[in-house]
Image (cartoon, rainbow, N blue to C red; front, side):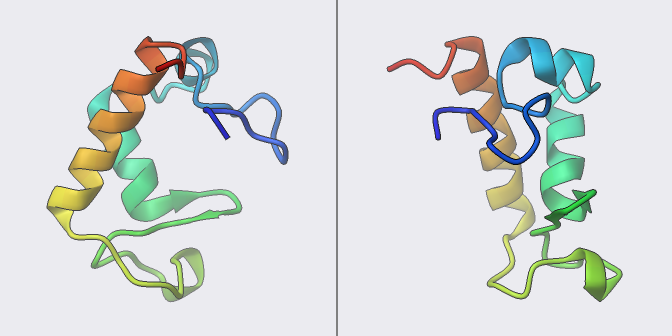
Length: 81
């Protein structure tokens, strides 16, 4: 909630952790949301291989891009309203 991560404390969506983990650019965020990483599944329409992707509904390229932008904007604001 609010950018935190209870499963991987050093992998939050706060600016310092995003920078430390090399995912502060919109492109890097897009790639992780689309393809997944580690235990986080990918959500992109053409995510592959199947074992690395969510079994839930997939997101379009536009939705993944919008989500990456949202995460970047909220991180820059410290996840505060």
